[in-house]
Image (tube, rainbow, N blue to C red):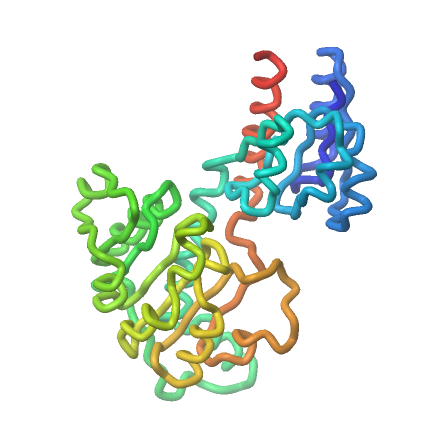
Length: 310
């Protein structure tokens, strides 16, 4: 079979050369690319003759997939699959498998790191000291003792809960599926409205589905305490970003942190969060660590080996 990895996946070329030798020994061809190109024309050029393709979070619409008549398997180096036209894949017998679990620790650590930054003003105080100023009257806050509402208790939400408990926070949770192992940690599940009302910090960890799109909107944000914080390392469209920006500008919530948006960065310069006060932004990096990318490669190519050996 012809196996094509359309992007670098953040792993060294030496790893790709080892993989190439591995698949050549098995009687397959293996092509890899060390750059990331997201335009449809390049994707078609790279994938058009592939039986198996590897891609991460680059959008893969039907207009690209339809130009890949041999394609039978997609090994996706990402947790979510909302960037791929799954309807087309189902209709054309293309098997799709994600890399669940590779970034669980990375995302949960960044979510907690964002909370700490908002509470302690780390980024703000860095700017202050570089301007030759002192802290003035600034006082930070501690994560210990805060009530943190975790929305979504899958693998990442679960890992975030464990970190929060280690910091001494009180954790409450909302999820469509209530997990016994989460309850065993002393975490109480409750309706989303109660999470929004009671939490000092709300952190989002849900996948993007038809049911979670816009899950946190104006109505939910209006329930939050005026000193509450909102953290989103899940998917941008889970949250009404314009409503969050308005709440920040009007002082109805104290701060927010976003790693995900309605689109992949770079953001337009008039994006509402760029001018919102007390808003910490990162360019979709929660999943991106050396450790997570190494684990991702293990999962992605392990799945291909399983497919080939089935």
